[in-house]
Length: 495
Image (cartoon, rainbow, N blue to C red; front, side):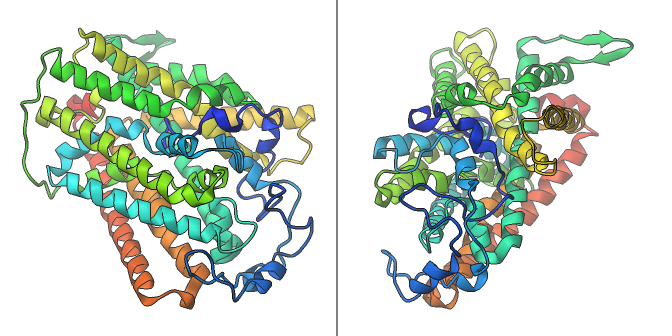
């Protein structure tokens, strides 16, 4: 989940009058809470009862329903809904057609990661394209596993719900923390992104106040944080959600602009590179992992479909189209700039061309609405620690202080670690590998256990192993590259 893809299509339910209520609880708040009428259980009915009744049934895939009653006997349905918080993504249950679901899937996957695919190809060599395709297949497979986990029993609606079904409340907490951390890290990336691209548009810009001197990148990152701060204070984000739902459009605009610069404006596609780079391959692993980190929202897409049997088709087409988009951008960008390819392809584009400026300004403007949308769930999780009286002036003041502190902390991290590509590689390695590969398989194995055929157990174990290896290698390599970048200040403009 990145800055272009944190929201779904506004066509579905972004303008509901009750949108502000959807932020009433966080993923940590409770499990299996009130669902829409067609899926809900009795207000305080223990979830163990229906699970026990369905214990010997099989689902549409021929798989047995899970015996979650042992874990959930004492869990009851609450009135405040995590499911409602998940509607923050702009999805209304049973509301979308196949075409709308496809747009949602594309909007989740086609995001700011497209800017880094040429850099990832440079880091891995041409063999990295095979890894991109392989990763898309694995992530599609784990997306299907999430669906089967959701169908394992009534009351499952979100990724943290699946975590609790598999590993109890500890599972919910762990998955929630990972998702919140990913959202927070995306906000940091947003500030770095804005600083890099705005400084390329206005080279030489600087700011001196009271003896404090800020160069272009740092200045623009700080100014961006100041501009987005009031949006973080908002409680109703429906209008921001509407504007931000065009991530897939922005991705295609950037892709077309880059192609225009290469094919029409005369830059050409003449550069080449080595077949394989072992030393920097782990960095590209993290970058490609970030591209497919949409699993936190897949349960929402599933719940939104009018015909939920179409979920596999929606997911499959979305992965195919996004893989074509990512691979096309990677090949175009790398063959245009070769070993000089920057971590954001927009930083390479000659500024005298109109298409270059369209690409850069699209990159700059589109994420502006998304900072608040990504930061709000993080803030809400902290606000749960406050006395529960959201209408009181004291609560509102405390909420503003918490949100302001979060924004200040993100700009602090962005200024301290201003290396866009390597920060994204770390997010993709450490967080996305957990969310997209390891946890879906682990939850699936925990929920269905010994009832699964041996080949599925082996396949899930292999995916977990691959995810763990990528996590370790990618995290180590990206952190090492960040440390090494401090000794290469002349190259910071490429990072």
